[in-house]
Amino acid sequence: MKELLTYIARSLVDDPDAVSVTQSETPAETVLELRVAPSDMGKVIGRQGRIAKEIRALMRSVAQRQGKKISVDIVD
Image (cartoon, rainbow, N blue to C red; front, side):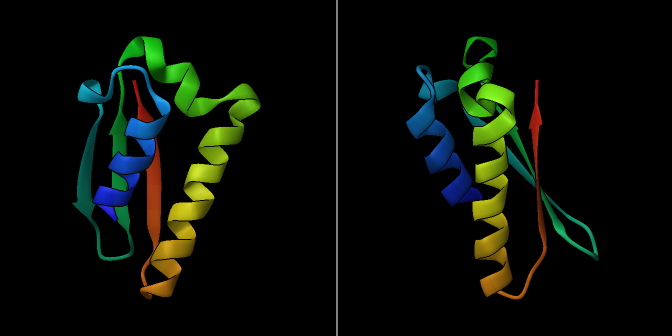
């Protein structure tokens, strides 16, 4: 799932080399932290957070199919 989030983020931003995803596991869920260049933050979040919401919904859908729970945090 980390690879999927990386692919999605790199497709959205102008500086794909600055994209990094950190994965951490807790007993309840998997937490993915997405970091992008400061100039690309708006492209990942979108107007009123629409793109960020859709990324989170897509990742939750994929995780649910695998029987897991996931959380996506966009870190600046």
